[in-house]
Length: 505
Length: 83
Ligand SMILES: [Zn+2]
Ligand SMILES: [Zn+2]
Image 1 (cartoon, chains in turn yellow, orange):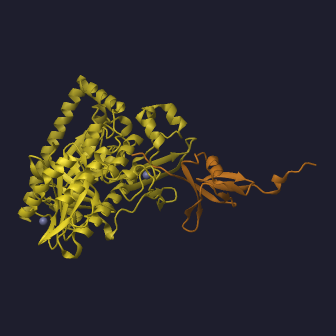
Image 2 (cartoon, helix red, strand yellow; image 1 turned 120 degrees about the vertical axis):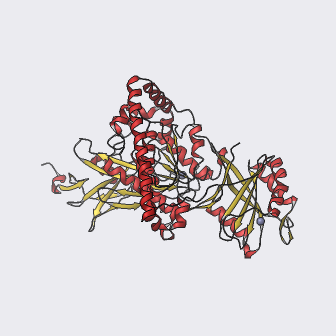
Image 3 (spheres, helix red, strand yellow; image 1 turned 120 degrees about the horizontal axis):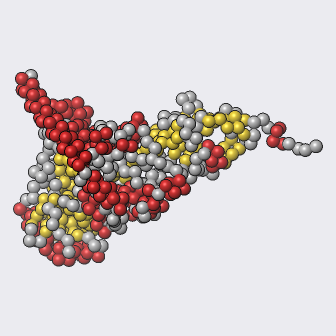
C-alpha cells in the first residue's frame, strides 16, 4: 500500500465545504464522499460530494458532534457511489496546517472502522482552518492515521496546503534572489514545492523543463519513451550529435540539462521512459501536482485530457503548428496555443486542440502510416526552434497564472497566437455540460481507462536496448559518461568556491 | 451576339497569406476562399486584415465574404499540437 497520501478537490467543492464548516465562527462538522486516485507512490482522495446532515443528525456538546446515524447514512451513500467517506470539520480562529488534537483523533478513530466496513475504503479526516488551509489524513484499518503531504484545491488557480513536516519548504539560495523578488518568499516556497511532471521531452518539453529547474522547482518529472535522433537536433537545444550517435533517450538528455540548470538547493528529478498511455506511465503521472502536456500525439493528449478532470490534476497543454506553402516556396504562417485543462475550462476536444478520430487512429498505430498522414491534411509535424520557444513560453505563462495568479487573476483560458499578424486571441471555447470528459470530474480510479499497451513505445525502447549492446555505442557512452562526471565534479568545485566568496562578502 | 456578363465586372486582385489572386465575383463563401488558398476549411479560419495596425477580423464558417479590390486575407490555423 502506497503510504504517501494527498487530497484534492475543485474550488467549487472547497467553497461549499468552507461555507458549511466555518459558518459564523462556529466549529462545525460535515461528511462528504471521495473517490481514490491511485498513483505509483501516492494515494489521493478526490472529494466528490458533500452530504448535508438531516435534522437531528448533529448533536452539540460544546463543539459540533456527529451521530452514528449521520455516519451510517453518509457511508451508505458513499458505498452506493463507489466512494469512501470523508469526515470534515472546521477550526475557526486557527491558521495553516493543523496538528490533530486528541479529541479529533478520538472522533475520527471512533468512526474509521465503521466507515471502512461500509465503504471498503479508509476514512479520510479533513480539517479547515480560518485562513482556508486544509489538513488531511487517511485512516487505514490496522495502520491508523497517515497524514497527507498536501491538500490541493483546483480552480482558476491551484491552491495548495502543505504539510511542512513531510514536504519542508525549500531553502532559497543567493542565486535565486531575482526570482524570489518577483513574487515574494512565501509564493516561492509554495511554488517550488509543487511536483511538476513534463510529459514529452521534445523541443517544447525541453524548454519547459529547463525553465522550471531554473525557476527553482524542487521536484520535476520527465516522461518520454523516445530516442534522440539527428533530425531532432535542430530543435532539442542542448542535445548534441554525440547524444544521437549514442542513442540516448530524450529523458536522459533533457534530464542532464535540467540538472545543469537547476537552482534549487536540492532537485528531485524523476525520469521515466514510459508513455503516459501505458498503465504504469499513467500511474507515475498521478503522483504529480501539475502536469505539462508537451506531447505530439493525440492518444497521449487524450489520456492527459482525462487526467485533468477525472484525477483533478491541472494539465498545462499547448503546442505549435507551422504551415509551409505546399509548393515549398516560403512560409504561410504559424500558430501556437496554450491552455490549462481543468474543471471549469473546456476540455481539449471542446477547445479544438484534440481530434477524437485521430486518437482512435493513434491507438491503432495508424499515425505512423504515411498514407494516413497524406489523407489527413499532410501534417508532418513541421517545427522551428526559433518559434517552438514561443509555444514553451505560452505554456509557462499559463503555469505562472495558475500557480501565482498575478494581479489576483488565475489562468486566462485558451489562448492562440497568430504569427503572421502577431495577434494574441482568447479562443472562444467554453465548457459544455454535455461533454463526456468534463462529466468525469473526480471519477478517479473508476474513470474510463484510456491507457493500454503501446507498441511504438515498446519498439523504441527495444531498439535503444539493442543499440546499447553494440561496442561502438558502449565505448562512446563510457567516454561521454566520464566527461559528464568530470563536469559534475567541476560544478561541485564551483559551488564550494562561490560559497567561500559568499561568506567573505 | 453572345452575352459575356462576367467581362462587365473588372477582375479584382486580392491576397490570401500574401499570395495574389483575382476574382470577378464580389461575394465568396469562406470555405471557397480557404480552398483557393490551399487549406482545409475544417481546420482553418479566415481573417481579413483591417485597421491600423491591421488586425485580422474573422468570418464565421458559413459567411459570405465581400472581396474588395486589394483586400488582404489570412488563413488562421485552429489547432497547434506539435511539441
Ligand atoms: Zn478539530
Ligand atoms: Zn469537452
